[in-house]
Image 1 (tube, one colour):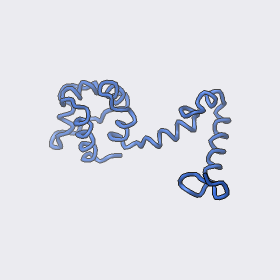
Image 2 (tube, helix red, strand yellow):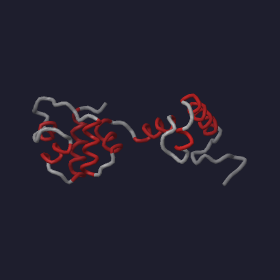
Image 3 (cartoon, helix red, strand yellow):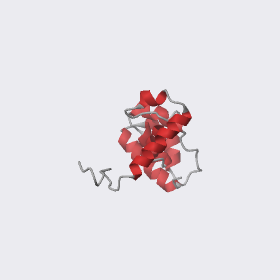
Image 4 (cartoon, helix red, strand yellow):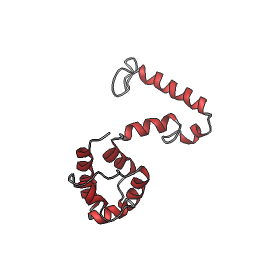
Length: 132
C-alpha cells in the first residue's frame, strides 16, 4: 500500500500525464470537482482514494492504460496481474485453448509451465544443452 505522500506524488504524475486540469481529472474519476485538489493537499482531511472502478473510468477518459493506473495509484504491478491472468488461462497466445479447460486443468498447465521454466537456468530461458 502506498503511503499518503507516495500516493499524492503518483497522482500528480497521473494528472500531468493526462493533460487534464484537476477538475477535469476529478470528473474523469467520477468524483466531485474538488476531489483531486483536496486529495493532493496534505493539509486537508484525508479523502477516499479512487477505486478500481474509478480508475477504469479514468483510463477510458484519458487513454492511460488501466494496469498503469493500478500500478501508480494502488501499487499493483502489471506483471502480477499478467501472471495471475495467465494462471487463469486468460490472455497470451493460448487463451482460446486455455479458456476451454477446467480450472483444475488450467492449474495443471500452469504447474507444467512453472516446471519447464525452472529447468532453464538463464534469464533468457535458454537450455545449456540447446543454445539458440
